[in-house]
Figure 1: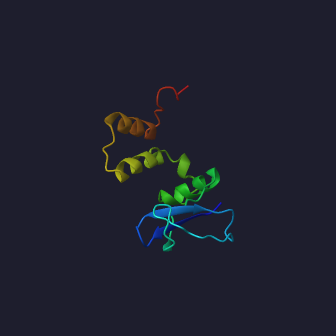
Figure 2: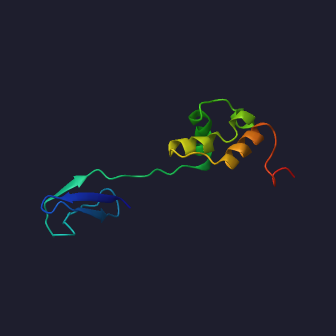
Figure 3: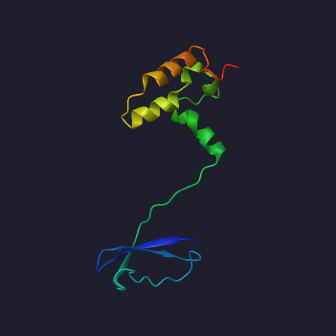
Amino acid sequence: MPIYEYRCGSCGQVSSFFTRSIGTPLEAICSHCDSPDMQQRMSSFSMGKTTRSVHDSYPSAAGSASSDYYSDPRNIGRHLEAGFERYGMEMPKGVRDTIEAAREGDLPKGLDA
């Protein structure tokens, strides 16, 4: 079901309208002041991803197109490091130590069984 957003020319508020399909005629009336002076605006949207598409895109996003990306121990924790960096946060020492140990071949407790 498409959702259309309109901004009212009278009061400036945004109203959303649900329709059954793209071809359904729509008379946009402001839900705040009942004015018909409405301008359609660009709405945000989302796009679903499959698990496969996420996995297929990750190696290239990490800077490597190699199919061996996940078997290379130097890449352990890269996604986590990138997340901390993206949000400007310092990685806790315990997390840093665990990643470094895993890169050296020492699995975290509980995974070494």
